Image 1 (cartoon, one colour):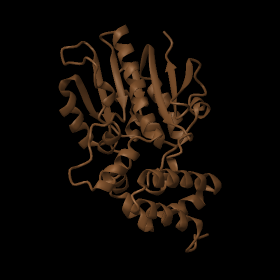
Image 2 (cartoon, rainbow, N blue to C red):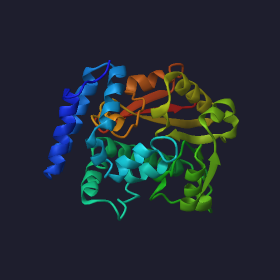
Image 3 (spheres, rainbow, N blue to C red):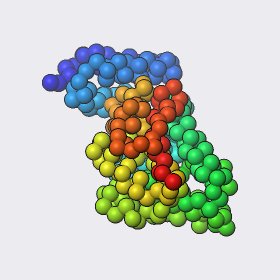
Length: 302
């Protein structure tokens, strides 16, 4: 099935482009994001993917590329969506580059402050609290971040190489690990590891009081996600905690991310996240930001 010329999709894109050209950028974007979300909800997934491809070919997509955040996500210079440099736009560690157009700056302000971006920042604060609580309870704790990125959750925490705590960041991206070391120095031990390596050799993870994954599970299908939880669970010290977060389908901006940014993830609510650890007893879930982020916390028995 193909989407013909002059379909509602074309009309929707044309309307957004006209609004932008008139300078009505914020209302045009709000209407565009809402229309994309409604379209995504109304069609089968396979059809939605075809629609997304037509949006990339529409002139409105070129307008969206003025936004450095949208452009970085779409370009995938590291070979995958959501790399640490791109997410730093959301974490507000990167500003719009100096060459960004006036349109790009207004779009950037919108895309990095929509509810799903706020949810990502809330996820970071949640993990920061877990790290702080773990260190308060045990100053010599071992803490491990899986698919760690730049570990922005550590910002503001009192970490130094002289502390007794041991903090590890595992990531498959060597460039990300270089930046991690540049930011935190000897306070964080950066370690290369892919999901495949973690599944086959979980012993490379030190026995830890806290293991967490911020955004990794947004990219894992259920079977791999469940297996990885079991592997990570095996690396917890007695009484230790495993925390996993997942964005949920409550985020209306998903359709924009998929169709304009070409950024596709796996979204899970609290029940879906809970099922990933179905054979574990010491499990609880919580939701953040009006249900936009689901969190799984698994505690090892003493």
